[in-house]
Length: 152
Image 1 (cartoon, one colour):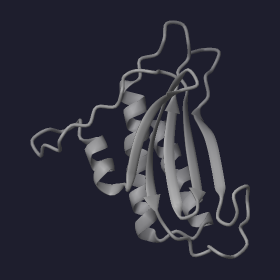
Image 2 (cartoon, helix red, strand yellow):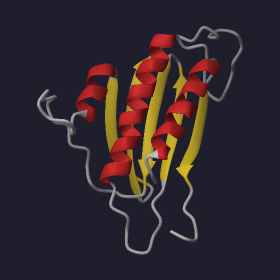
Image 3 (tube, one colour):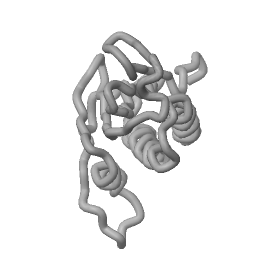
Image 4 (tube, one colour):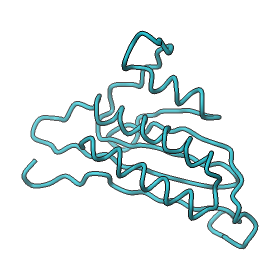
């Protein structure tokens, strides 16, 4: 993973929002949430000796719930939410996410951890026959932000 993962995640979140007709305001909030979640993974995940680091962005929209999740291959550290302190330059990303999202969770999952935030949104395209596994308005996209390389 690298800082370029953050830009890739923002671009993918923007494309997802546009495809579903989310408002500009929702896109801006999604950019910030995704940026913070991926940045935490890039900054805080400690690679295991001899193993490449992996980060995956998972975007899901179902029944007016837009979930942005980041999975990485490090089960620790658990996310630490600190109060926003205007005198401190870093460490307040999750406090920002909590202030913007209607839901936030994290869990150990599949050899790593998953950190997710949720927004309630209505798509401009809602009710246009999107269909899916659970009825109208279901879509999911999962993307590896940085693939492990042999040289890592």
